[in-house]
Image (cartoon, rainbow, N blue to C red; front, side, top):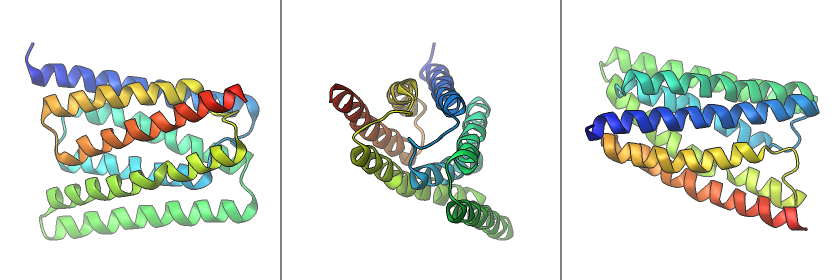
Length: 208
């Protein structure tokens, strides 16, 4: 089995773990009829990041199986946002959610139009990748602060944290085997760092 095939299999494994983790958080929110454990800003940044990642992977011609595994992640991320909108958000937060996500759609459409106009879709894909990396670098900071202020991760799915930590390691190995662009490697290294911090918070606050 060559490195490319191993990389594809590991990517599909990582994607499946991610879908499982997201689903457990959706399930926890649905049971509690609340998303209070989640930071609104982290959630919105996450939506933006996964949307840009999908565009990055599509425009940079990633293998089709990888695209197929990312699409459910995008759908589940927006379900999490809908749950927050329905269960937890105040009126002014609901307005903020609609404005930010509406702006994101307009931003992506404008960039795609520019890319098609000048036949530079691959360059736009690279740009999406770097923006996803930069936004994703700060995506977890509001959530980590939110956890710290609450001194608790109650309502935050442990399976979501653990699965995302392990998937980041698997995805990093896959990115190296498939020789994906540098953005993919940096994104996975960032995931490992942030989920390590959140797992540390989980076990630390659980003892108190």
